[in-house]
Amino acid sequence: MVSVEGMALSTRRGNVLYLSDVLDSAVEKAAAIIAERNPDLADKTRVAESVGVGAVVFGALYDGRQKDKNFSLEGALNFDGETGPYVQYTHARCRSVLAKAGYAGSQKIDCKLLVDDEAYEVVKLLADFDENILAAAVKYEPSIVSRRLVKICQAFNRFYNADRIMCGGEVEKARLELTLRVADALKRGLKLVLLDAPEKM
Image (cartoon, rainbow, N blue to C red; front, side, top):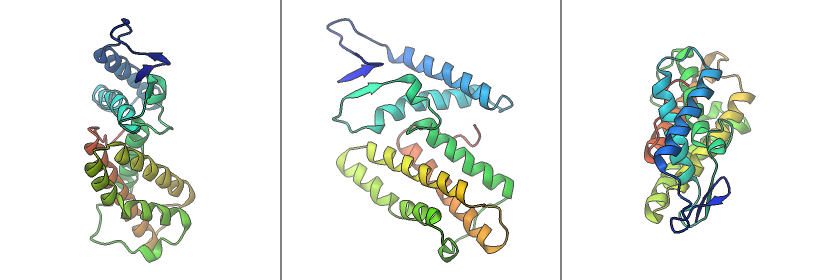
């Protein structure tokens, strides 16, 4: 059962909402949010389309296949909730940190330097991400990937707020490498649930 803003959809009763109209509204609202948050962003139209369409898709794939869905466009476009734009924004944040640091990555990460709880939680979530992807494939359940992406984002943002990434020395390199691993995982996961991963938002 799918409802939109609390109204159950039913073709027999004439309660119909066209997907094209929902997508158009989502892109329009995403464009307004981006214009307010980052008016100087290059290629705003393309990013707004990625975010708007992605919000609708992610909203449909966040809950289990067999659960009723109550879709809210405003909720789906929340940049701070369990949404596609939140995951896309966290990916863009990671890429921004890496660009400012001029960090391209190394072959290994020294986890011994990531001793605080926030960093450890990120490492744990990344460590079994492949198992989550496999479980989603076996169970035909994309929500497993969507929900794990949100958990990774929540953990990374706690890490980002708790630890100064640009702190110098080997610790900085370890934190930048962890940030790169998060960005790559988010990009891969977003692709699996059919969302773009903008570099800037």
